[in-house]
Length: 281
Image (cartoon, rainbow, N blue to C red; front, side, top):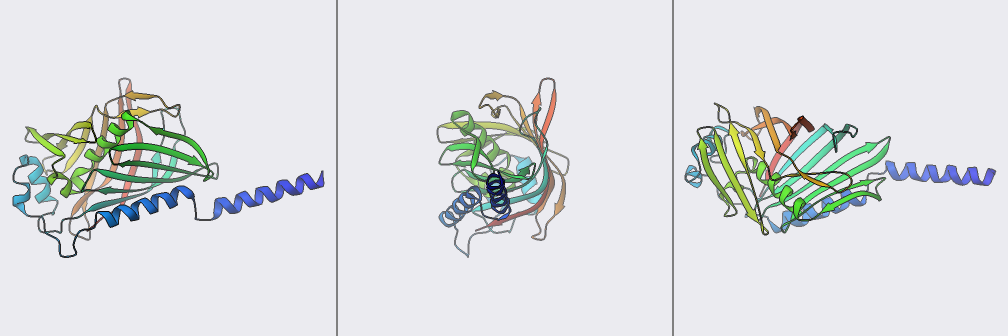
C-alpha cells in the first residue's frame, strides 16, 4: 500500500514538473513553423515604401482607411504579428469561458496564418494551434501538453481559415496588393472583398465608420466547428473598436471581438484587447 502511495506521489510530482516547465510540443511546433515561414517570406532590408498610388485602384473607403491609419510612407512588410493577453474565449455556447493568451502571425506573399492559444483547464495546460498554410487549414487542441482533444481539418476548415485571413487583411496592407484578393465598392462605407487560394474562395463585407476606421467584417463563409467535429455554417463577424496610435505611428484597433451570429442571438466567443501589433520584413 505504501509503495502504491509512493508511486502515485512520484507520478503527481512528475506531472506537476511537466506542467510547470515552459517547453511543450505544440509551442515548439508553432515556433518552428513561424521561424521557417519568416525566413521564406523575408524581404530585402531596403524594401519599398507604401505609396498612395499602390492603392489607387482600390475602393475609396479602403484608400481613406490606409491614409488615415498612417500606412503611406511606411515600409512594405512580409508578415503581421498580433498578440492578445487574458482574452475571454469559449469553444462553444455551452462550454466554459477560458482566459487565454493568443499570438498570431499572418504572412503575405501567399495567404498563411499561424495562431497559438495558451491557457489552462483546472490547472492543466491547454494549448490550441490554428493554422492555414499551402491552402490547408486546421484547428488542434491539446491538453496536458500531450493529449489531443480535437484536430479538425478538411475543406470546411480550409475555407474558414481563408475567411479569417481575409478578415484581418486590412491590418497588413501588403495583402491588399496581392493578386489573390479583390474588392468591390458597395457604398461610401462598405466594401465587399473576396480571396481565392488553394481551390477555395471566401468573401465578406468590410464596414467603416465616418473616420474610415474599419469597424467590422462579416461573412457567411466560416463554419462553426463543434468539439465533436461537426461543422455548421453560421454568419460570422469580427468587430474592431478603440483605435489608437501605436509607437510606429500607425493607428490600430485595440479591441477585437469574434462573433457567431446565430438566429437566436449573437455568441461572442473571442473578446480581447490587442496588446501588441508588429510587422516585419
